[in-house]
Length: 415
Image (cartoon, one colour):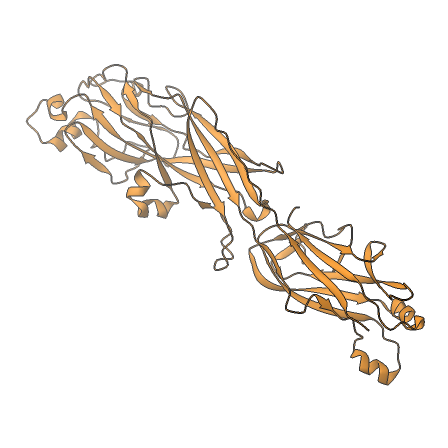
């Protein structure tokens, strides 16, 4: 009997999206990438690819330990009136109230419309404050520059954050400036009261530190997901510096861009695209015994690498109902071939069941969704081809010598 020819095709899509930012707000891109790493198959998370600036660029070890990232934003806050000495209301001085609790926003696949959720929280804030005069002159002179900055405010030096903000170890100063960074573990107002009249006061920029929670990339399609989250800025808003300190912009929009670059690769060994169906003990055993073979079959191994969902189906040169067939060229007599697949550990069906000898059909029913629990890197699977006993008897009774046909097995990531 001549061999059965089998073709294997893998279909992978790459989807691109162009994003147009919202107007009338300071905008900042937050980007992240998922690309499976064969050396770390169980680390199936997005990598934050947003360029780091500000605090985390200067002190990377501090941020790595807490999975914190920072960006220096061109926000400038200027006082609209002098900060009075011993003011009783925190809103009349130097205060910070930030969106430190987790906020969610939806990101959408540009081509498929699929949606996922991204979460973000503010985990720290920093800047350089600038006084309108020399710190020593403001507190009356006769002290060192460091002591002058300390005496200017209630509590300890600005390096020591007021509750509920926390110390970060940053405190750099000149005669008019003080550079600081405070961590913000919980929601609340962090305020410093002035002990002396400060005629003019400003923050020269804003170091925005954040934590990010991203969705499970293994359940996402290849391509780019985008979405945005807007914070209002000003007194009583999401980012609130009190009633005296007003910003140069009234909103901050974070534009999220999540790129998913999945792997779906199938490798068949050399010659594996030609499959010969034989009896259990081979043709020679059948010839010697004279018994009709109970079936003709062949198991064909392959290796699969997959980080994405996929589906499987058949395309047939010769059709027999919902499956493929092989036929004898002279008479045209055809018999169906049952094709099934077994997938390696780590790949399951839509309800999480292992895939063992799952029938492949032309309409794809029963194989509409396979999904990885982790990145499967070049693990072995098996395609099973079989002609059942009643069909084998028909083939032998026909007197034909060879049946052939092409079967295309499709792995398709467009689920």
